[in-house]
Amino acid sequence: MKKLTNIITLIILLSMSINAQTDLYDISINSIDDKVLDLNQYKGKNIIFVNVASYCGYTGQYAELQELYEKYDDLEIIGIPCNQFLFQEPNSQSEIMEFCSSNYGVNFIMTEKINVKGKNQHDLYKWLTKKELNNVENSYVKWNFQKYLVNKNGDLVKNFPPRMSPLSDEIIKYLN
Figure: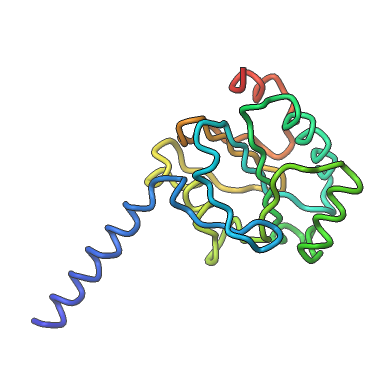
């Protein structure tokens, strides 16, 4: 009986921790220079989360992301390096930042390298891809440069496919 009680208690605690994690701003992630990035500082701003890679056919989107970032004062772009798609981001975090700034003038936020799918999926991407957490939709990260738009209230708006330009009318309409 004691074993059953312990199992039930564990299930309840796990359920509570999953449900408590439904606020985007409670998720912890580090910046590319290994400092804790407090997502609370972006309350009141739209955020585009995008998994990025240096050796991808879509890497040129860095320039478009930077242009978008410079155009909208109420927008944060958060680039999230990931090496899960054909090993297209093998570089160290310092090499990634050097590559982005010297080749594309990137000065938007970049995070540590994480997993965006699979067994070791980061909590941020659990939230972005699971309807039970984001209350909008289930999705699957198909490739590098998939974009997730979160509104000023911290609600997931929509995800956009990797091939879609960050400057597309489809994305811009949500920012105007």
